[in-house]
Image 1 (spheres, rainbow over the protein chains, first blue to last red):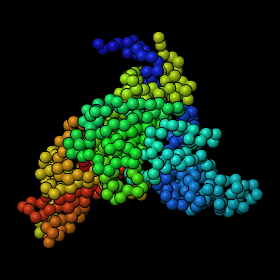
Image 2 (spheres, helix red, strand yellow):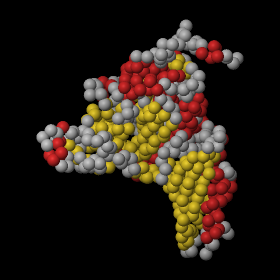
Image 3 (cartoon, helix red, strand yellow):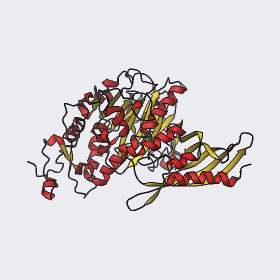
Length: 399
Length: 153
């Protein structure tokens, strides 16, 4: 039976942990608070160590809290992260996404910095600033960084944040062996979608949407073990999903994967979601890493990285690239569907569209179609935001 | 020597057939040994990638399974301009380079936006009674492809 306006807005017949108010996906104030209370407090993946293998290699990064950063490997081979902004007139220091810079020189007035963030030259400094200001006053703003958990470069713009291992806890334990050898990024692309970042992370946090994926239905949902996959929640809003054996050859034109991954059973698939928007997705031969970077309440960039083993032979690497892009590339079978889904949510839940609720109410003993992964995320979100996801403005008429 | 007009027409016809989603018609333009790829250089990681690689059979399977997938139903318009045609009479082949612009037109309202640009590198078999595509490499400049697409360019 269809519903009138009153019924449409009635509280769903679930506990308040099992639905959210859609304004958390559209409201500008909430987005600004998320930048401040979540993204500027959490450890975020900026890049992978294989993207900056040599001394003085750098990689730029749009931090989801808003700051423009770059990560650079020093002559001492230590990776550091800095704001990508000249302390003089606020210009961008590094324009290219990657490069090698022993000396970072601002194009505007040629102020120069070394890869440790020290200012090493201010042209005509004495003439202009006399004794009032010099290089020692003009270092770059350094951001906390650590390399770990598969060689990813993590950054945290909060100087008072705890160490990365405290933030991750045991959440990546399921992949400990899988991430124990040197990895290498072999493909990278971005997508910009008019949608909220949480909706993308939600997609990575529930498998009920496998109904959308013909490939996943045929190779996964119809195969033994699929409905046994188990969710597990961890502190700080992280969650993991256990493995099964994917039957790749059930899809026309697809073959059983010939290349596997150390520590993963043949055809295996393990997924770990890290709060607030990163996903380690290890599927048989490829580790896919998603990083969701909101640009506003209704726009986000998603960075996609595909990784293999640094020790790959050319043949193994070619196979991993093929496996990745067949499913997850911009012309792959699955990624387009996932992005179409989150794009559709963005269309339907725009501010003023009277969308009202999103349900996270499925309970199936924490197995694959249970929506416990999303519930776990929103419990953490509510705690950090000091707002209830189901009633973010305390104005819902709840039972 | 095969006339350049015949080679040009093969390339342009391939775009028209793909635009109209006449996939069988497109495959009729392809040699049995046809290979297709979409590749790009990714400066962020300083590496090449192949986003799609299929032989003729793989292309047919890809086209055949399209109706089972959830896809963006916007249409693509492929504009090709043949830049160069180099014929190798001994090998009975031609190598061509064309410029590609692909425009996407939404179903709702019909807004058209640029989807991708790149170059199409074709190898064309001239050994039969008509030119046939032996390989096609779509070399994309564009890497930000929105929500992506299920249909090759």
